[in-house]
Image 1 (cartoon, rainbow, N blue to C red):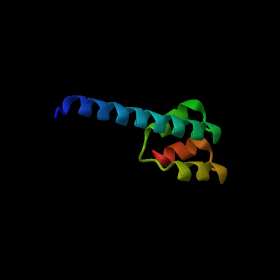
Image 2 (cartoon, one colour):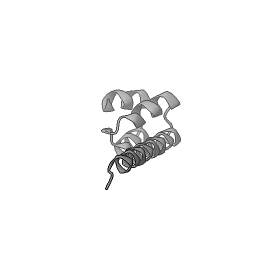
Image 3 (tube, helix red, strand yellow):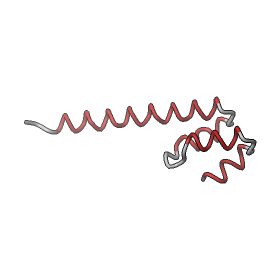
Image 4 (cartoon, rainbow, N blue to C red):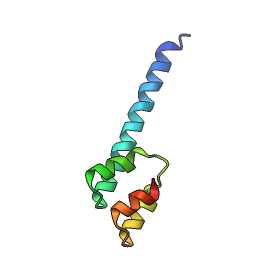
Length: 71
């Protein structure tokens, strides 16, 4: 059994999944009112809780302040 193609396929699948999650996070943040640059920055930080981020802004935290708090 050859593992080379399977490993390559797995890496590609994981990369595609990561890109999909990154795009979804970006869209959610942009819809939540973040400027595109801030949305991209936060989306790329998978350690930042998306729901916490959006809740901060919904509760009145300015988005620039939210970015500083979360990063």
